Structure formats: structure tokens, C-alpha cells
Length: 302
Image 1 (cartoon, helix red, strand yellow):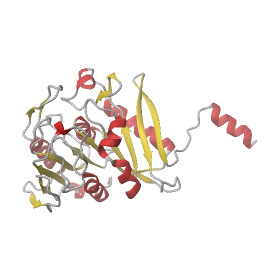
Image 2 (cartoon, rainbow, N blue to C red):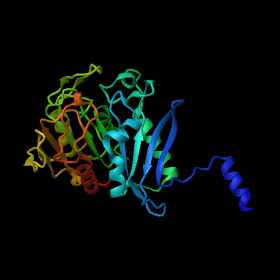
Image 3 (spheres, rainbow, N blue to C red):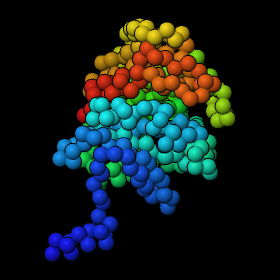
Image 4 (spheres, rainbow, N blue to C red):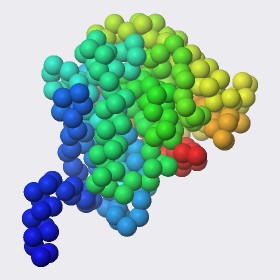
């Protein structure tokens, strides 16, 4: 009888529980198959729920590239969370984008519904892993960072907090269903997504909103105090950069908006060395992974 039950489960496609390690999954969105990668840390035990961090790659990159670029698998193994790397869309498999509003490429031009895609990814993950639904967070690089802002606005019922890196909000305003805490990392010497907004280097042709536009929008949406506290962070590396933290606190439900400004920093992931020198300097004074994880732990879904 037990053998028959196993056969039935296989026949009807019963989902197989994820084990620690690396996995590739796919979901169907509007008749199109879309993929994502999952890293499950070694301490994962299906008997206990675990936080999830969504990590969106930059424009012209892909999920596999984001694994190496961000180093989030190592942080996940240390801290104990599942990392999910959604795959963008495009004509070339290794050069993909997300529709984050005014950026980028194929995804924006075709009005791809990447919010619906993300919701389906989370639905699929919850079928095969024990997810702590109060602790689902999002981070991303550049176009992926912009996607985080769109999720915070349009998927706030699932996303607890976001930590965009080197990418501003891609919409004029935001209308989240609940207050969502934000930690934004950005270099003031970023030539690809300029700190003050406007067109940057690269083929996207995007007229970016400024970083301050993003911060002001979310300070207002969360009801934070309009006057921030500015704190210089320790200068731990002789790399030509300095870091300051600009914190807007006392938002609804304990939310906050934190801008981490890397003076002299480029279009990079703080604490990680970029493979392309053209991206500019990556500060070693801080680790974006360490800072965002500490931030995420303070801001579960309420």
C-alpha cells in the first residue's frame, strides 16, 4: 500500500522537498516558463521555518552571475537563510533584465509582469520548503535593485523589507499596502546609475531617478521622521572610499529608511571585488551582506 502511494505521488507530480544545496526551479508565467535558482544552507531542517532572501541580478546579467557577484550563498550558510535568485527575461539567455518601471531592456519594453513572476516563485518555493513567511526579504543589484523597489510597492503583503544596491526606484511614486523598511546602498561616484539621477554609462538609455527621490518617496510612504541622523562609519580599508549612514527612523510599525552612501564608490556591491574594473571602486569598509542581514533581522513582516 505504501509503495502504491509513492507511485501515485510520483504520477501526480507531488513536489519533492528541497534539501540543503543548490537547485534550479521554474514556474510558468502567462504561458512562458521562467527559471530561478535556490541555495539552501546546510543547517536547513524542514521541521523549522527559515527566512528567505530574494536576490535580483543586474541588467544584462543572469541568476548564475548574481550568485558570484553578491556572495550571498556564503552569508546564507553562515547566518541560516535560503537565497533565491530569480532569472530575468530577454532574447539572450545570459543577458537578462527585469521590468522595474523605467528600466530595463527587453523586460520593460515588453511590459513583462515581474511582480507576478516573483509571487509565483514564492508560491512555488513554499510548496517545497518550510519558509518563514514573515521573513521574506529582497535585495538586488542595479536593475535588480530597482526591481526590489517595485516589489516593496506592489508586493508588500509578501516582502518584509528590501535592501537595494546601486539602483534607484524606477517609478515616480510608490503606493505600498503597508510600510516597508528600506536600506539602500549607493556609491556617489556611480557612473552607470548616477547618484543624482540622469543618464549613465551603458546601453540601457535609462533616465534614472535620483537616489534621493527613492529615499524621499519611502520616507513619506513609511511615515518616517523627515530629518535623518547621519553617522560616519569606520574607515577600515585604505581604498579611497568613505561610508556614511543616513537613517530616517520612527516610521509606522517601527519601519525605517537607511541610505548607505559610499563616497568614491562605483557601481559595485560593497564588500565584494567586481570582476570588471569599469564598474568603479568597491568599498571594503563595509559588507553589504552583513549590514543588510542585520537590517532584515530587525524588520520582519508585521
